[in-house]
Length: 356
Image (cartoon, rainbow, N blue to C red; front, side, top):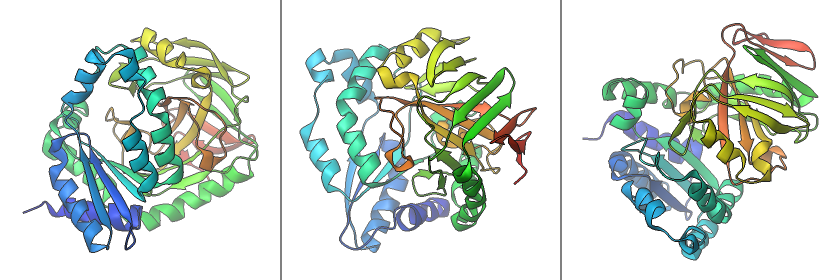
C-alpha cells in the first residue's frame, strides 16, 4: 500500500505543478531505482489526466563509470536521441533519489564541466521551452546528509511539499511587487555588503510549478552590476562537492576574488568553466518559513525563509537574464541573525523577517 503522502505529492506534481492535459507527453525521470513508489504514482496520475507517460530510470553507478571511462570524444558527445526526446515532450518530471551523495567526489571536475557543456542543448531545451518540475524522493543518503533518520526526513520533505501552494503564491506576490519597482538590491550581513542592479528585470514568484518544495522569489540581476563582497555561512554543494566558507568579491558584475575554507580549488575550477561562470545568473529570496534547517540540499535550502541565494553562471531567459554558462551554482546567504535586505535604500527585511 503506497504511503498516502506519496500519492498526494504525485497529484500535486501532475495536477498543480505541471497541469498535465489530455494528449500531452510526460517524461518521468529518476536518478535511481529507489524512487519507484513515486515514479509509479506519477505514472498513474499522468494516465488519469489523459497524458502519455514515458520513463527514464537511471542507475546511479552509471555516472561514475562514465566519467572514469569515457574518452574525450564521448565526453563531448551530444546524444541526439535525448535531444529529440527533449524537443518532443510536453512536460518533464525529474525525481532525485540519490543512493550516495558523494559518488562523484573523486571525479575530475573538468570532465564534469566538459560534459555539462556538451549536454547544454538538452538542458536548455527543457528548462527554457518545456514545463518541468524537480523533486526529491526520501532516501537514506538524503536523510544522512540532513542529519536525520529516514522517517524524520520523510516528515521534513512532505511537510515542505504537501501544502496549499495557492496560499504561498499570494504571499509571494507582495514581494514581487516591491522587487519589480526596484532599481537595486543591497544585501548586508556577516562579512557581506553587496549591491546588485535589478532595474528593468522582472522577478518571478515560485510556488510549486518548477521546484518541489518551493517558496522563493527570484530574478536575474543586471549582468555587470554586482559590486561588493559576500560571505556564505552555509556550505555550497555542487556535483557532489561541498565547498565551505566561500567568500566572493565582485566588480562590475564579475567575480574578481574567490576564497573558500574547504575545496577552494574546486571553486576556482567551476568559476573557470567559461566566461559566464564568473557572473551572477540569479538572485533568489527564500520565503518558505516551514523549512528551518539546513539540509545540504539546495532544493530545500534555497527556500529557507530569511535567506537569499545567489547563483553564479547561467541566468533564466524567463527572468530576462542574459548571462550564459554551462553551470548554475546556487550559494546561500543566511540573514536571520543580523542580516538585512534593502531595495533602493529602503529596508524590506531585518533578521530574516519581512517588513513589507
